[in-house]
Image (cartoon, rainbow, N blue to C red; front, side):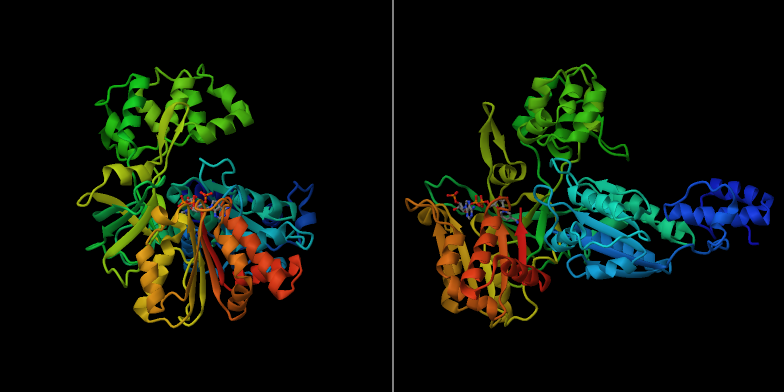
Length: 610
Ligand code: NDP
């Protein structure tokens, strides 16, 4: 028999040496018994048998041969595009290892095929308050319904994407894991839950999956965190999330008129020389800086020296405490892993008790920043190096792109509402929006990257009618949609529902919509200015007023797009659509819900909601 080596097996050097010492000492019977035992262990039914006889029927793998099916199904549930990029990466790697891979969105997957699958990989993000992304909803519902089959033969693993600053961190991934286990599935490798900085844990998960599924050398299947970044960023450019492009600011204007309660910045950036390309519906990731006042206050509260040098990454790069807090670390969100680490750094701080009280911790997470935490708990005395080392890297903010690259080659435009509010007697700032509003001018540069979003795309056929619902800054991508349709000379009808507080001060891009209406690029526009009338009026009210025509458009094959607030608006607009289908199509509530699910499967109902 061929001796095991790291190059002809999935084992590392230490394991190879152990196995090479053990295997030649085994009798035929012992080998047979061990082969069966391992196969049963993999299937999750292993109890140490009294004799080998009970398991002798199991196939005995030859060294280096696979024990299991060579077919792998990879399913993704994705809202902003990260899970798609990661799924493609793992699928490619598995194929390179000679495995047969079937890759699909959960939305396109026929769940009655689930029973036949032996190896299943799931890459899924969590959205809103612990909800599945749009294209995972029906699969999630199916698995949790009575129709879900027993899955005793299934081996699966889950890569869950999420954000620890949300209470229901990676909830959808956890739901899938729990349910697949309940249905009889066995974890191939344990689920990995990733925070926003997912490159390294995702690469580790992929390597574990490859090692457990592959019959050839694990070494050839190694995935690096750089490869992950490249996969999710895609495209030809060398610039991506971990290597952002420094884009020059060309324009930074307030779109709101004098007297408005709101401030919305229209920002134009140059992408010249970056080779970055995007399509309508994609987003731009922007790395912001924290507010200098908050940084000063935090340093003062901790009694640190602003110019003390601290190490900020694995390469040993150093920055001053001030610079590190300004540019490198997140100091606004309070996340569980950070609080757990701080509690370890000072066990007397009272943070351990906070962590033990779920509801109090939830309050703190939803309302406090790091400065509040420092002021409320005894954290003074932790040195800057140790404290900063437990913080998250400042995550980029994603904004729906407001321009078509066909109308504005080498440029990208954003529509950003400035977030300012007061809490506990202190003014609070949206990190990125206030950075853009107060401290960025034409000529400055911003680190940016493109986040492709295949889930929010114009119909392939330019003749297809489109209905766009985008109150507030949710209108941003529709400026890109119409710019694109104008450039390509699309013939399809287009209808925009837009709303904000006041007509006179808050009508974003008013003259552009009017021009498009005049030129026929936009067929219809209905507006809802919520605070100009005694009774509030919202976009969904306008949709209901035009229910007959809207239903007609849907019957003609229109695609409908919603962008903006997820918590209330998107739910209310969905409910309005259900009402319209019942009213105009004579459908029951269940039939109307099915109609919307069908639209979603046909990619005719797409949402970019936060
Ligand atoms: P808002 O959504 O706060 O306000 C826009 C208009 O919508 C106002 O007239 C407001 O009325 C109205 N409105 C309030 N509640 C509802 C409701 N239940 N149904 C319909 N309309 C309603 O505008 P912003 O631009 O400040 O914020 C937009 C939201 O969308 C934010 O949550 C933002 O995070 C998100 N967003 C996401 C984007 C993305 O990239 N996907 C892009 C842009 C925004 P009133 O204030 O009078 O109640």
